Length: 184
Image 1: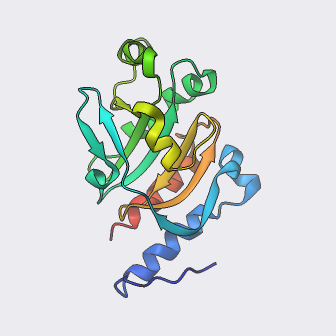
Image 2: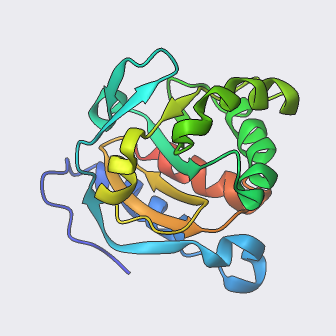
């Protein structure tokens, strides 16, 4: 399926079609990625605010120019805890200037447990970010934990997966590579 590509330079049409082709993984080959719901058309993310580990406010626009996998999670969410090591391994496979896993914790009062959780789980490649008051979660219409949203370098949602997944498997890696390739 092709999407209209206004505001694209002629050479980018091929890159966009490659991204969309990778997002159309066959269900049998996709494993857990068959739950990845491709956006009908790439849509710009609202520029919502969240915080880093030092309470510095950040916006999604601060990360423009690289593909993102935004992951909403919490330390008290068993499927989230199960998924985090795979997200850490996925991040280790890609340079952060091209691709970033953006784990947004909604822990709130449990916030002091996040850094020790990272240490206990040996999560060395993921940053610590918080969605204070769940504003980004609400702004992106997320209602289930964990939920991961794949964003292209132009800041557009390509699709999302609700529930946990092994992101560092070949199908997940292929999705990230396709999203990164759209930087061209």
